[in-house]
Length: 329
Image (cartoon, rainbow, N blue to C red):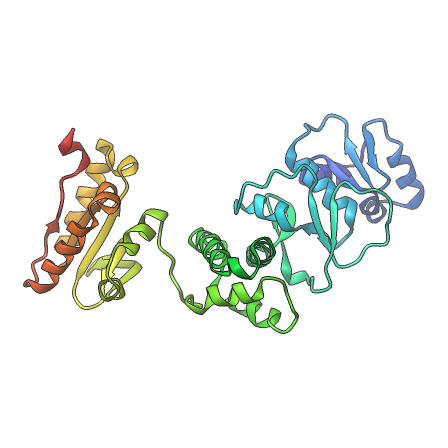
C-alpha cells in the first residue's frame, strides 16, 4: 500500500512521480521499497507511473518534465500548444531546463537555457511550463529563423497576433512583458528584434481588441476615426457599472458594439442586448450596433454612419446603420 503523501503527489501529477521526489517523502530504505511497489511501473530510471492511472497527453508531458529535472518545464512548441498559441503536434515533448546531469535517453527533447530563471516558469493545468510572455518571445525567435530577414514583417504580424490573443485572454500582463523585453534586450535572445517591434505600438496599458472581429472592424476604419475610439471601456450610470463596451468615443458619449451573428442572433441574446442598450441610453449614451456581415462586406456604411453621428447633435439612442441578421431571414 502506498503512503498517503505519495498518493496525493500522484493525484497532483497525473499519476506520475519522480524518484527524487520519493527521497523527500521517505527514508532511503523506504524509497527503495516504494520503487519496487507492484502498483508502480518504471517509465524511465527517474520516473514512475501508477499502473491504474489513465494514460493521456498531459500525463506524457508531466512525465517528460519530471524526467528532466527540478527546474524543468515545458518549453518551445510544447509550451505554445499548452497555452493554445498554435497547433504544434510534436509527439516528443520539448522541455527547458537550466542544468542537467543525466545523459541517458529522455522522454522529452531537452533545451539547455542559460537565461532560464524561476520567474520564467509557472504552472498551467498543473504542469510546469514557461510563462506566456516567455513563450511568445520564443515564437518570435522561431518565426525569425524560419523566414529570415526577408520575412521580418510577416514574423512581426504573426507575433503580434499571438501576443494580442494572449493579452485578450488575460494570460499576459503589459508591465511584465515589457520588463521581459528590457531584460532580454542585451542577451542576444532570438526574436528580440521582432518582439521589440511588436511592443513598440503596445505600451504596458495597451488594450487589445476584444476579438478577431473587432480587429477586422478597426482595419476598415480611417486612421483619424480609429484614433477617436477607445477599446474595452467600462461604462455605467449614476447607480453603478453597466458593463464593458467594445468601443467608446473619446470626444462624445458614443458607444460602438460589434456583434457576431452566431452569438447575438439567438432570441435570448437579442433580449439581453436590448435590455443592455436601454440601460446605456438611459445613462446618456448613443449606442451604435454594428453587425459582423457589415464589417466584412460593407464597411463603408459603418464609416458613413460614424461620420454622420459625429457631425450631428448629441441624442442618446440606439443607432442601427444596417438591419439585424434576423430581419433579412
